[in-house]
Each structure stands twice: as structure tokens, then as C-alpha cells.
Amino acid sequence: MKAKHQRLILAAVALCGVAGAGVLGASALRDEAAYFRTPAEIKAGQAVVGEPMRLGGMVAAGSIQRQSDGVTIRFVATDGKASIPVQFTGIVPDLFAENSGMVADGRMLADGTFVADRILAKHDERYMPPQMGDMPKNMKVAPKV
Amino acid sequence: MTGVISGNGQWAYVAAAYILTALLTGIVLWTSWRAMAKAEKRSDALRAKNRRGDGQ
Amino acid sequence: MHAYANPTRFLAIAKPLTPWLLGLGLLLVLGGAFAGLTMVPGEAKQGETARILYVHVPSAWLGMGGWTSLAVTGLVQLVWRHPLAGIAARAIAVPGMLFTALCLATGSIWGKPTWGTWWEWDGRMTSMLVLLFLYAGFIALTSGDEGQRQGGSLSRGAAIYALVGAINIPIINRSVVWWNSLHQGPSITLGGSSIDKALLWPLGLTVLGFSLLFGAIVLMRMRRIIADNRVAARLRRLADDEEN
Image 1 (cartoon, rainbow over the protein chains, first blue to last red):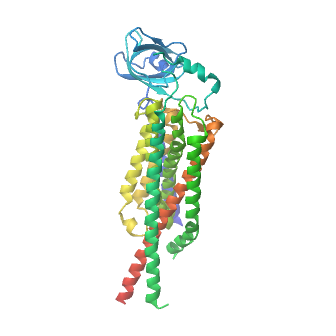
Image 2: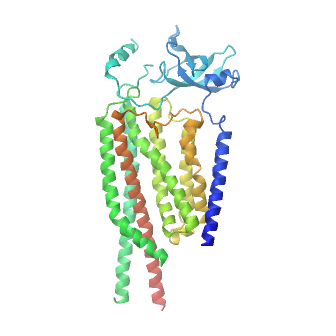
């Protein structure tokens, strides 16, 4: 009985130690493990001009502008606290849209614009059935060829 | 850039995910079952042999 | 006698339970998959690809739940040295690794059309990949070891490995909250579900169904180890009889 209790206490102590180390490690990793920076973090100085980095945020409503070359777009990424203009040349995922999340690979320019090499769409945790009512409206937005 | 995934291409992804799941789960189920059936058969046969050996 | 009595009592429950888990599990999984593929509409934005949810979420739950049970059996082995603990741990490892691999694979297949990438090193995906490697390490550590030849108990090292590895489980769970990640936050929380009711119900079927199948696989693998133990014990006894 005594030996069993000893083993139990030993296991509990070891487990607490490991859990503590894990939590400490995880919180220390907080910045390192972040997959992207938000506009507010960048505005707070967490970006070096010209260094490769990732920017994540919502595409601001009404901000997507297609440039005259047809393949370059400009839009504003926002997290509600700060906004950063983004420029991207290339193909975006289907889910990329205004009022949706996105993550961009690229770098900051000195003038405060983010130039993206690649854009990923970020889906949120909501799963909704299609609203039959606004389907046709969405369809009309599809690009005319 | 419509904000919606559309087109028939998406069914290929769905099919790939379901087929992979069925295949791998099926393999593990089948091999686990086979190994169990074989081991239990061997164990039962040996027990019968033991009984005969003991003359019970 | 203690070591022998427990597996006997266990088998009295496990033998009739196995076909029930297997049958009911298959029924629920097939029903849930059918419902998820044909009876519910596609999602508003993700379209048909959202249906991958019905195999991805059960895999994630079982991959993580598998290691949690592995840690519990490791603890029971370490402290109480219950004869079934090590056997259960050995039986859990392979199905746990299976569902972790399926979680990663189905997630990757979903990520390509949705995010626009097969793989990114974000917190959720990286910590789940670590879980896969943890399973691989446990299997390598325990296959063909002393314990496998002698009743199926875990070595102290393997039991501690199972316990220490459990620290990764809350990290996986919290990764999307602690760190900015590409993976979305949790859809189902204690507060409710942000998956609409119309799309949610097949998920209940597949989560329950795959869980039952997981249970069936664990029972089958435990029965195999117990049968092997008995064969070894009888062969030893036969050899002793011949010597006498």
C-alpha cells in the first residue's frame, strides 16, 4: 500500500511538473508560434520593412479594387483596430472576399503598404446552410468573361 | 474571387477524404479482427490439447 | 492468480461487447456518412467541401481522445500495475495513430480548396503532426519489448512517455486560441455550436459511430494480446509437464 501511494505521489508530482513546463513553454512561444501578425500588431511596430512575414485580417468591406492590368488587386486588411493596405498580383482562393478572413505572405513597404506574394483564405468556425434567397445575387457578381 | 466555393471539382476532394477514411479504417478493423480470431483460435486449440493431455 | 482472474472477467464482458460495438459503429458511421453526403445541403461558402467535416471531426476527437486514454492507462500501469492497463495501452496505440493520420489527411484535403494550401505550419497543424509522431514513438518503444513477451505490461519508460506526451493534448486544443492560426477556432464549445442545426446532426452520428468503432478495435486488439498470453502460458506449462 505504501509503495503504491509513493508511486502515485511521484506520478502526480511529475505530471504537475510536465504540465507546468508545457504551459510555460507554450506561453513563451506565444509570439514565435503565431502564424501571422494582425494589422494592429504591425502598427504597434511588430514588423520590419522588407522582411518576409505574414499578415492576417479581414478584407474590409468595399475595399477590393482591381488594377488596370487585370491581375493586380488592392484591398485593405483590418482587425477592427487598425488597417493596412495590401497589394497582390496573382490568383486568390475562391473564398477570398470582402468581409472574410485572409492571410497574406509578403513584406511591408516603407510607405505602409503590404505587398503579398501569396494569399490564403481563412474560414471562420461558422457552418451555415446556403440562403436560397441571395444565391442569384451572388451568382451575378461572378466575373463576366 | 466570389467568396463561395463552387463547381463540380469540389466533389473530388470530398470523395478523396471519404475514400481514404473508409480504406484506412477498414484496413485497421480487418487486420485487428484477423489477428484476434487467429490468436483466440490458437489459444482454444491449445486449451483443448491441454485438457486431453491431463486426461480430464 | 490476480493477474489471471482479471483478464478472465474482462473477456466475459469484452467478447459479447465486441460485435455490438462493431455492428452499431458501422451502422452509425455509414448512416452518418450517407446523411452527410446526400441529405444535408452544402455549406453557404465552402459548398460541398464542408462535407469533409463529418469524417475530419471524429478523427480529430479520436486521435486526441486516444492519447488521453493512453496517458490514463500509462498512469494506471505506473501506479497500480493493473494487468489490463498495459494491454489496453498497447491496443490503443494503433487506432489512435490511425485517426490522427486521418485527421491530418482529411484536413489537408479540405484545406486545399478552402484555404488554398495543402499544408501550413500553423499551431494547430504542427501540434497535431507532433501527436502523430508521439504515437509512432510509442509504437516503436513498445513493439517487441520485454513487456510484450511477458503479459503485455508497459515498461516504466513507456508509461512515463505516455504521460508526458499528454501535455500535447491541451496544446492542440488551445492552439487556435493561444496563437494566431490559419485553422479556425472551435465550432463546438460548451457554450453551443456555430455549426447550423441543419448541418450538425450527421456529425453526431459519425462522431458516435467512429467512437464505437474505436472501442471495437481496442477490444479486438486487447483480446488478441490476452489470447497470445494464454498461448504462451500453456506452452510453458506443456514444456514443464514434459520435464516432470
